[in-house]
Length: 282
Picture 1 (cartoon, one colour):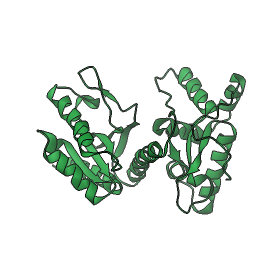
Picture 2 (picture 1 turned 90 degrees about the vertical axis):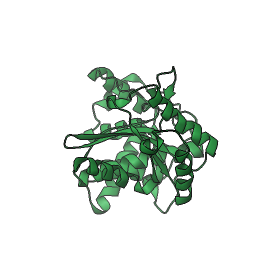
Picture 3 (picture 1 turned 90 degrees about the horizontal axis):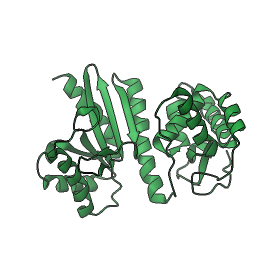
């Protein structure tokens, strides 16, 4: 799909009449509603991530062709908008684009929320820069990998919330602000995690301050989602950065050593599932 000249912000600013939104809602497939919900959950998602999440049952060339047609329809309907920039790599067309909710997509989700009387929040990013895009897509990739792994293995991804939906009151009038919260389960065991996606852009004092906020949360006797204190998964881009994170954690007061786990981005799902598996076999 040849990208249109959309701005770098997630909304084209074009008005969509209410009658058109209602008419569009009546034609959306379950797959299209699910795509809108995913983009709302994660804020930014690549075409390839959407393909892996919502077209996995298709094989061969048909998978990319159907994905192209569906995403083009949603873009043409102003439900999604692709960012002007691509994410890099050798992929062509819509797989390489990054998508956010557009005007009609936001209104469609609001309409569905009102009709179903749910409390689903509509989340659209503000002004977008390269650092924000990279950070948000790294969080989206963790979600995509978890969904893929859950299809193949015997665990369930019960919940995944990206920021700001993942934020939690800290008990002192402020907020814990992880990049994501997730819970996975197998049998009667459920693990709860807060996630910090580190791109090696923050200085050590900043990391220390961020990690201390979690220690303070425990010290105040607070509980997070699931009425537990989630552990904190820190995903990093390189082994060198993992050593930096480990050094910061080692100098923090208890229970830092038990609370934090640092792992490479592409090994995060393996750690999560290994921890859950260990609990189920204890």
